[in-house]
Length: 406
Image 1 (cartoon, rainbow, N blue to C red):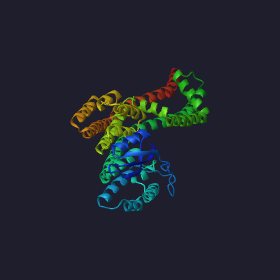
Image 2: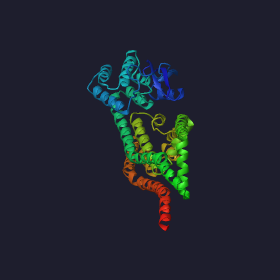
Image 3: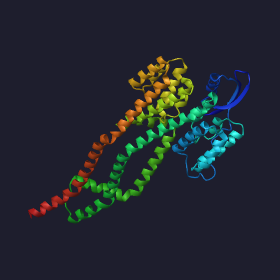
């Protein structure tokens, strides 16, 4: 998200300067007005550009666990009354990741240069997401920075939990499918060519299935370098396609239609949205501001587009329930919870409930994922073994029968 440097006057008539994140200048002005600041000038902040990691950070990245530890330790240190600069020094000394160490050094320099913590974090967009920076900004504005770091920790912990659940559930089917491809490659490159030489020496008429297997094996042995190159090119082209906005959007939309897995991906994405939106609302952001930020952390371009459309509808004066229903993302139960939250004035609590409902559903689905996929894998493996067995052994049986008749 772009950063904008602003100048304005607060309710006391004092001049205030700072940096905030917003999709455009109009949204930035709305955010300032909502915080009690009358904007005088708003311009893109040229100093908030991505900074490449320096020092010993080559080949390493900041993982989610690093941000988890940073958030938790910042909360603990600030709760103990440690100033921010000293807290950053302490975290820098204890950080195990060189990239994180350099980031903390740069953030400290930004603070020493007179920038707010949120603006200093925003100068590291490859590490701190717009949502993270916006929450820190809210903490600075409301004087609840300590509490915000605790909520960010809980938010990131939930993200890590969901991600680990999905990885754990997909590990077994991925392993089985990988073994099947390796077995198929070994059969085509090494096993079937040996049987083909034996059959050729007998000069017997081969069944169609055996001829097909031998033909496919000969094609693989002859053109395997070309096939390998085509696979590499296909993977490269697919990744490039995913890097384009249109490609990412179409792929993220298609993922939600996958058998079995699509339902899990959708529920996990909505759970992530609901938890993030609850955090934004509880931190004092308006629904429009919250939706604008949350659309960037759902990790799905299609759902993000739906959330952006919800934001546009709410911005035009439509209530959140109607916008959520039109998005076609939420289940009737979730919509009912949103309605209750609107009517009772506890939308943040209800969105937390939505996240809990979806996360429990995802956990249940993931526990049963292996049981659902296992029959499909068994059928695939059985068909593969049947085709190979018939193709390899039918000629042997035919030759044995012919010899017995003689």
